[in-house]
Length: 253
Image (cartoon, rainbow, N blue to C red; front, top):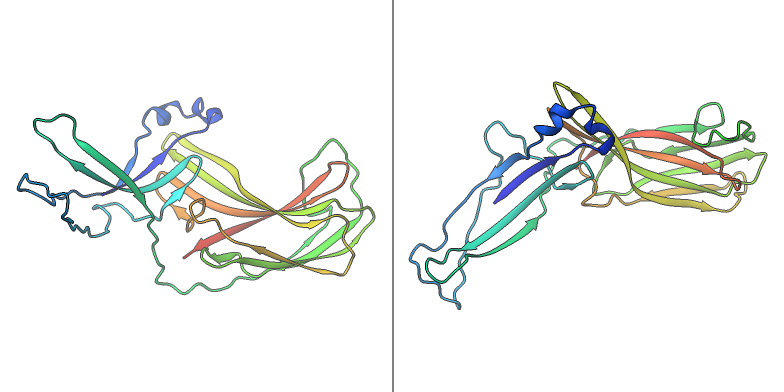
């Protein structure tokens, strides 16, 4: 049974932290072995039970399974049949999923918001003038249980131009580093279109999103890596102009 954290830098970060790039090695969380048949006689009609205690090695912390771009946390079982005289050993490897229940009760942290040209991040700088608009709403909680839906509500107060759509982006921010420095990269996990076409002012539009299991995990802050999450609410206009507002999330189990 083997559990590892593998780290890598993006191509644009390699030159900045070359010393760290050369020393990137997998972090071993779990590494246990056992022999389940010692007699040397294998019966193909017999089942061979085995078990491991799922605990981390000394001085290591236990993390949930996570498949990212620059950080990967994986747990695998490998079975090997050792053959002395016939030829190569037979081997089979299988990944299994690890979840770590939290002992603390998660408290909801509701966040109300207003989106207007004055308090958003302008993603399209080719056009300086944006329409007069105001969007308000709330997120049910920015501290989220990973096993429950992410929910909220959005409402258009007014807009002087038609809106093409409103999207919800789930973003992961992965940080790798050491004494030489830290490199942080943000990548999109999923994008959900909340509305399509122009919206009638005053209509309450629900926000509902399921966290994808393998591509999210409880927020992690370790010595050499971090995994954070955030959502962006993005307003898109027909001519390609974009405005977005970012909300950092804390994910727990």
